[in-house]
Image (cartoon, rainbow, N blue to C red; front, side, top):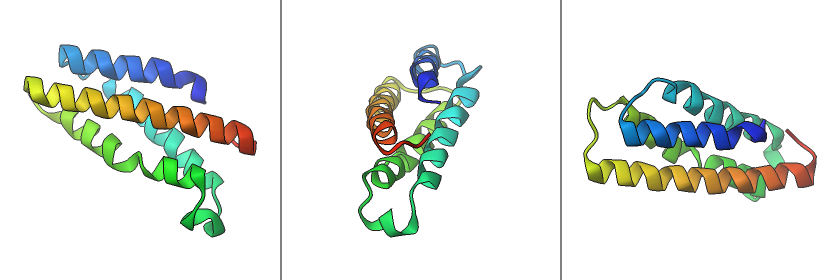
Length: 107
C-alpha cells in the first residue's frame, strides 16, 4: 500500500499547482484509506503511546485541510503554499508510518 504514496502525493501536488481537482479526490481517498488501515493495526492498549497510532492520528487534520483546500473554487497563492506545506508534512508522516509498519510487520 505504501508504494502508492509517491504517486498520490505527486498527483495532489500537481492538482494544487494547476488548481485542478481531477484525480485529487482519488489520491486523497487513497491516503485516507492508508491512514485508516494503519489506525486499525494499533490496539487499544497502544492508544496512549503507540508510535504508529500517533503518526497516523497526526494526519487527520492535515488531510481534512487539504481536502478543504481542493474543494475551493479558486485558491489564493498563500493557500496553495500552505496546502503544499501540509502535503510535505503528510508525505513525511506517511514515510514514518511505512517504516513503523515494516518494523512492526503490519500493512
